[in-house]
Each structure stands twice: as C-alpha cells, then as structure tokens.
Amino acid sequence: MSATAPTKHSFKAPDGVDLAWHEQGEGRPVILLHGLFSDAETNWLKFGHAALIAARGFRVIMPDLRAHGHSSKPHDAAAYPPDILAQDGLALIEHLELRDYDLGGYSLGARTAVRIVVMGATPGKLIVSGMGLRGLLDTGRRSAHFKTILTGLGTHERGSPEWLAEAFLKTQGGDPKALLPLLDSFVDTSEAELRAISIPVLVPSGIDDHDNGSSEDLAKLLQDGCYAEVPGNHMSAVTKPDLGRVIADFLET
Image (tube, rainbow, N blue to C red; front, side, top):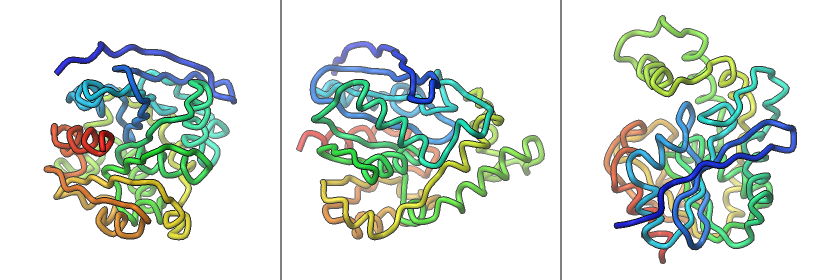
C-alpha cells in the first residue's frame, strides 16, 4: 500500500476564523470529519485510515473542526452559532471548488456531515460512522454529557466515562474554553430530514458502541442506508483498521 504523504493547509471561514485541513492522496475527493475532542491526525491519519483510502485512488480531505487541532479555538460564544461546523464544512467545499465528491465523518464528524447534507450539500456518497439515530435526533443528551465533563475537570471518578473523556481531552491538548461554547452550536436532525437523504449512506459502528443510540436503526430509516459492524466501542473502533477498510470498500463500489 502506498500513498502520498499528508499535507496541511488553511483558509479563513466567512467569519474570519482560521480553519485547517489536511490532505492525502490523489483522485476523487472525499471529505472526512473527526470527532469531538479529536482532530484529523488522531481520527484519520494516525491509524492509517487516510493512507488506506488514498491508496485506493482517493484525495482524502480532513479538516480540523473549529475549536480543534490546528484550527482556531475562539473563546467567544459568538463564534459558535447554531450549525457553525456544518457552515464551516460548506465553506471548505466552496473554497476547494468541489463539485463531485464524497463526504463522511466519525461521531461529531458524522453528525456534522449529515447537517452539511441537510443544509444543501450534494456529495455522491455519505459515511456516518460512530453515530446512531438517537445521536442525530437528540443532540442535547450528548451535549449535556460533555458539558458535565468540561465543567467538572479534575473531579470525575477514575475509570468513569467522564474521566476517560477528560483523559483523552488532555492527550489532545484540548481547550475547554473553546469546546464548551461549541456544544451549544449542535442542531438536531429530524426523522423527515433523514428520510429525505436519497444518496447511498454507509453507517459503520463499533459492535460495542452504544454512545449515540442504534446505528442499525439509523441505517434502516435512510432511503439507501447500509449498516456495517466493526470491532470496538466508541473510543476504540476508530483505532481499528476495519473502519478504514469498510469506508474504502464503500467508496470504491
């Protein structure tokens, strides 16, 4: 397996915030969005997913979401209006002048990819990984969970989900003052909006991942959804080569 080395780039969002993205490979573009507290390096580059997909003949475009990675991390709540991550995604698509491309993400990245489509983007295929139906219909439940984590840093019981998330945040060098207002920007997606998505959608999820509800139920609700089971839970599935493999296989068909 061979692919070009990843490169890093940046552009300004319409509101002036600096946003970074990474690229690897050449061919049909596919945009992949990472999860909360993470970044493109951790979700897509570190464990070889981008290299695998790029080796299949794709140009893999991986933004660092606002408040993450190499992108700016403003503390002002005004920098996080509703659906700002989807707006940033649409701005990147326009900046790169993409017309024929695929789109996907993991966890928050998956939810954001769905919002980008709901807001009018027209990818050929969509990947919604590490996400279930409940996580799209009701974003408030997960937002509340992460608000508890960010407002109680240093107080969580060792080994608890909150403690593990805080530990991950620390390894990523996350900025709580930027991530906390970001949580208020999440927007629910209705069943009607999901049913209206007519393009092929892959819904891969860890066999032990129940953080965002049922991925199988999500795939069944979609017009052309396909559920794919991969090893792991919400934190570990993204570290397994199976995730990159099922995404690459889906994109190739």
